[in-house]
Length: 288
Ligand code: SF4
Image (cartoon, rainbow, N blue to C red):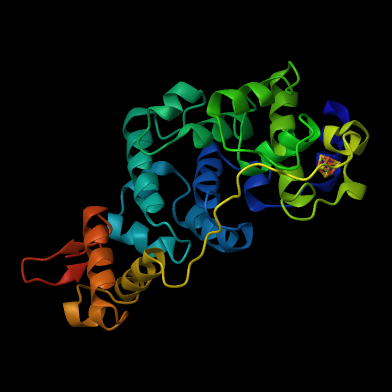
């Protein structure tokens, strides 16, 4: 599968700003954290803004947590902003302001998980390490195992599955990693894979097996309306849109269900995304 897939990737890859030549490992790290839960189209403008404002980790580390949460805008899951801020401080203080290149050192940074560490090693430093996200798991499930979709994740098995697909040389392996991910995102999609456009159609085990239906456990459907995630976002929006602390009444106005609102406000305080002042007002972290 290697040559056909890598060739397809080099000809068909999306032009994304974090894939441009000259983008630093810091740029790749920021993009990977932003992209984890958020679609590309929403990440692009915020990533460009962040890179212009904070081209090196020490730049981000120098501003308050509140400024970082504000700049995160509406990307969602804003704890990621605090994680990036903490990682930036560590990189600035202990790694000469340069994102480390090996998986273990990356994993030792605050808030950097297995996927992100591997993605940075592969995409920023062309290291031969398996990088497995949902898209890659689905491609492997179909193309290699002949299943209709990936079953529940299993870190060790998923890594081993991808490891054997990687070419021996680092640079090619890194290309293969990103090509697998791009194929899953653009062609071998969850609901309607575009098999006629697939560069590995001829060797795909799912095709050879007659395209069997997926029979594993159903994936949970993620909803947003009415969830705590929505309410937390609305509460944070109030603070993002003002310069200083706000009263409890301002926050109470965003959601009618007081039980859910209180729970969400508490969780934002616990997560360090909001702080309460001595006067009982609410502020973004470090902004009072
Ligand atoms: S042929 Fe279809 S199912 Fe197989 S890898 Fe390509 S897009 Fe996915």
